[in-house]
Image (tube, rainbow, N blue to C red; front, side):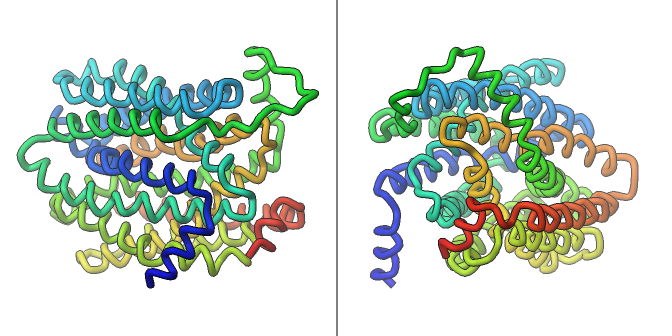
Length: 411
């Protein structure tokens, strides 16, 4: 077993493992707070999921703007400094959130915090793509999934017990962790932005932002982004609406919800790398379609089952799809992007999560507060089916392109 772990370690650059280790520390803080934020809003301010969804939507909308700015700055200034700045903003904003006691103050604060904290999102993705060669990206993003899910075992499990005593402690812990990670990035991780070509004229700042027109004009890429958004608007429910649904409809405590997330994390840790190795020989867009079908089945189950054991089974099915979709989608986005525009392509890729996060919780809140809550999962299953069809059509249209064939042949 040790020899196998050592062989995996040697397959990737040492710098990649440094980034993975630092990211693990960061994710521990994030997993302690993010999944329980909807519960915090509904409990702290005495509101329903509709109002909580609006707050989460404000975060996501401002985050999209921040991501757009960050993507352009990533291509112009580099990755490292933006990541450090984003971590510092995150620490300050997290503490501020924990001190707010009036819902009316939460809306403008959510906009400012989302704008500043998401500046570094594209830089993270671009840095990993910089470090890894094209043929290793899908597996590399899979490794990061394993590392991130190790944090899910620690974060939500601890949070389930901490929130029974103090929600504010979560904000303090997350802020401290962000500061530690910023220091580690400063000390140990160098800049990874590719050096400009000898005959390349540096872009002006205006030209850098105008480059988004080229990204949006890449219709093949935008088709990929749209299909992934359909999946993400359902997937995002796992981290906000699901906790409220299980509490209100089935009496599941925060500790029980935390264990569901831990079950997902354990599944990823045990099977992600094995899965990544086995699936890399398959066409990437077909993999995305298969992952969408897993989402359809897993999320759809929540509308039909009523026992805790089946809730765990549903989360495992969703996780099987997640293990396919997450690393494959990130590798696909990197393959679409020219080297000099990687930050901006990854910023638009960030929309596949940010836009669903903006509309998903509020839309779910309307259903949960006004209609049969099970319809949230029926409609979610339908969206996943449509996304799977979209990825199949993209396979027919784009599957023969060189960069996507290389992803497959690398296996």
